[in-house]
Image (spheres, one colour):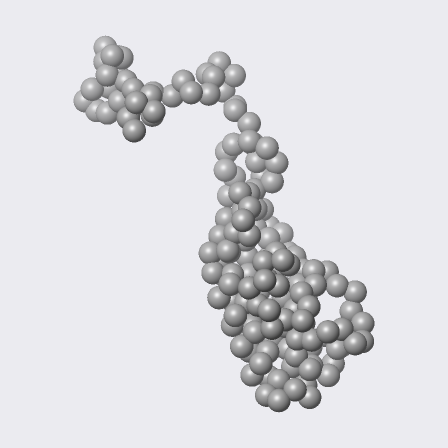
Length: 163
């Protein structure tokens, strides 16, 4: 996530996940973390689905010209980047529920204009498993009514044959 955000929004001088905050950090700065995890819809394939909530804070030094506007523009760029974002990973669903709003900066960096951006993303954790021991993968066949059911076995085709 960090590399994708840094590449897409070069105006950010820093993008930090779970940072240790300290004076003198390069700005504009985006800090972010996963802040909530809830169960997602069970995919039924052995994996676990969680819906993770991420929160980011974009900080711009207050002494910059139009600092609140600059923070708002950077938050909007992040919100745009998040649209359908999957980070190039096969275990994530597209980002949903993106929200952005002005916020109070973190106490350690009080001399900043700040915007918060929040989003949710479903993550599939673990490995898929084939749950039907007596049916090896690839044994699925199809037929369509009325050419289906007992006595119509000759009408069934594999998915590959239907392509």
